[in-house]
Image 1: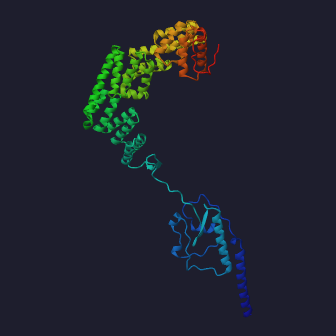
Image 2 (image 1 turned 90 degrees about the horizontal axis):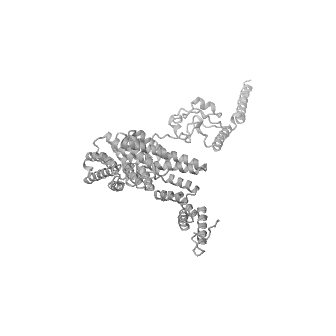
Image 3 (image 1 turned 180 degrees about the vertical axis):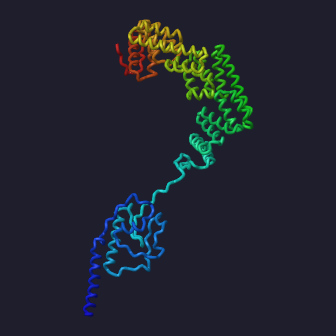
Length: 530
């Protein structure tokens, strides 16, 4: 019995061993598992031991008490390295176990080849763990691509470093880039007057004088004894025509003030005084000459000087020049900025002169707007109020006359235009419109007179020249008509209507002289229309 019991026990052990191997080889747990999808909610830290053992369906090796096999916290911050083989770690003795281990490794490698972002690596102790890609490291200092030397510029640099970069750009003539660096330095340290003074220098080079003046004033507010800022602001005030302020700042500029600077200011003061005297006595030629002197002495960006020059040109009946000069002197006209720098009286005067210019060139709506603003700033000025009334009168005359003309009421239109000309006898637009009415009434001589006066005021007034040419043709003054049409064709060669009119006048002129007069056309492509 004892022998049989012993045999049965061995057989039992053998069967159990064989069945265990078969079960272990063919168990569903030993099949190649599909890799689990990575949960995006998993944190950056390594998973705990319990989650690592429960989520992986593979048979885990026995735990080792070796300290090197324990996961370290720093391992989560770098890619998992291939685990070292522990010499003391027991190996599986059965072939089936080795096959199952190879099967597990193949499943891991195949899962790794299917996707790169979901990587699984063997940990010699904990089994398979999900290695989450490391997030991008955030940069604390904001960086941006700058035009400075094509290098990324750190805008949190020391403001002195930003100022030096701005100085380098300024010396290279790149004033826009320099301005950017100075403004960044001011943002980092707005209480340093040097940055404001350097900003004003960049703005001056960019032609933004009013903004440069504000920057200099801020530098002096921070440091009232800043001599360099006093000198820079004085030169700005001289260019803007604020000569009294310029003289005051030059007196505070210390070593930066030279004798020639004081002489420049005094020369401009004398010119402006003579301008005012000539204006009061209506000696417009003298006023025009003195404004040119003032500009040459340094007041080259003074709105007041340009306004005086514009007014002189208007009274000398040089309307086109007056308009050009006014546009140049007030190209950055901002009422609030002008009031701050020049005061209410000068700003009102500038608006009044602008209204007169707009009246002269036929921009009546703009004239009404400018004169209204001027009267609002200086309501006690009779001169300003007179210009405002004049602007409203000519605007009304043009509107009413055009309505009558379009209704073919040419006599009424002629009367209304004449009423407007009583307010402004040298208005080229009203003269040309009245010439059109007189042409329709058959008053060709009168139409020629109006057109001639309009052209004397505005030599490039094309519409007035065309109406004068048509009037000459109606009076059969062929030579005068040919001369006018030829000028028009030279100005606009693409105008086919004018070219045909010129050809017709040439034909009539030759017929009148028996065909003995050579043809004065502009080319063989002219078409004669009878």
